[in-house]
Length: 335
Image 1 (cartoon, rainbow, N blue to C red):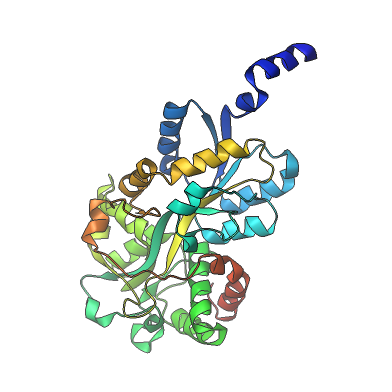
Image 2: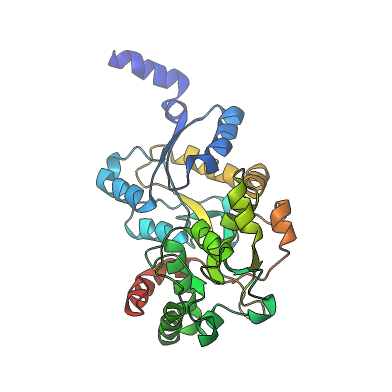
């Protein structure tokens, strides 16, 4: 039997047989990535096996499985977890001219361990009834006393908030950022709870006047099939912070080839597909995210919000500063 399979390998190439599928550990919900992967299978014949779960759990799984892990790609919704996976030696460096050309340097690991696939910004949403955009300016201004008991936000365990605080540490320093965080906590209308959609709903019913959310959550609610979500989203408006300064905070969904992968070449090809024009257009239209690739049009909803100035901080800094951000938020009383 062994001789038979050896003959098959010599005739057909074992590499091609191994590359007939790619296994992905994905922190993205299946509905937000599987249609795109199905298109890839239709075009290439490569089967995609998708395992979804919480990012931290998937990273822990990769760590426990070690070199025996079947995963070829790790896909997450925040740069902080990609940075963590790299530091745990779970990812492999990829040398791809196509990826370097398509993904701007600030949205990929400088050594090629991970690459951004789509962008989102963490913005301020405000009540159309009680707040005017002229009252808003920067993230820093959210700590001003006039917003006391008027702000809703997710918990400090949320990676999106941790990355925002990491960015502020990079720009302002740790002392100023901690003072800001304490001011923000004092201005919270309630203890942090729920996801970004819950913050939008809280603003819509008057539990608070402002909230910090990712852009694609608001866009998703505006285009939802659930009437109550559309109604809530229409009661709030989006404000781009820090447009006269460094720009609005941005983050990525991104992916990296796993160190354990036995299909690194095929995994890299899938990454290259995900930053191609077809896939980037799908991200924009289906998920209402901003393409990481230049020149790809955004959805009508995002077009209505207009162009904005984005923070040009290399996203690797968010991962580097994550531990300091978490400790700072704890000191500030951000639950």
